[in-house]
View (cartoon, rainbow, N blue to C red):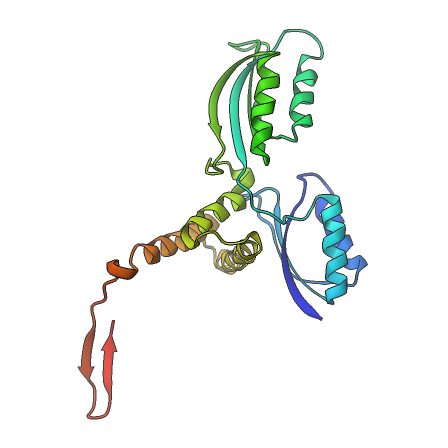
Length: 244
């Protein structure tokens, strides 16, 4: 039996977490650690399980088939825009059909036909595939009048629904072009630190900010930029104390 850590991305709906736990139980896996906090990310769940190599392979295979397994950390494209919808029955459903076909995740939507802008829909979207953003925009522009408010394909947009993916991109900038497998493992370790400190009533976001601040400080104080103030104190005739 070995211990494995993985990141699950479960839908924000009743029973999702139970479905993931049922898969682990099905193949005899034992959950040693579980961490989910919607204040940080409403979809990401960290699991640490004990299982045989064969069982773990089956667990991850089943979770992947459900779409619950986070195996890559590609930057998410972000789009926020005004969409001027025609005022007839079914127009919203027609618009949502475009976003669903593009596999876009709606993070914010606002519409009120009795408000100041009765034909204007405000929507924010996340998309994993950057090419889908352009394709979706072309489709929407040919059908509706659009006003683009924000458009980002770097994954740096401050959208809490993809917090860990954004965090991974910031880590990648600090440690270089690391593989996704390493970053996923690094995220799991960082999440474990956050979980321990949250149990001591620390703000989880402050924990992640501290990790990033430490990394940025290390990166900017290496090589020719490294400096250390060293003091040597003779404690006894045989012992020197070095203070850095």
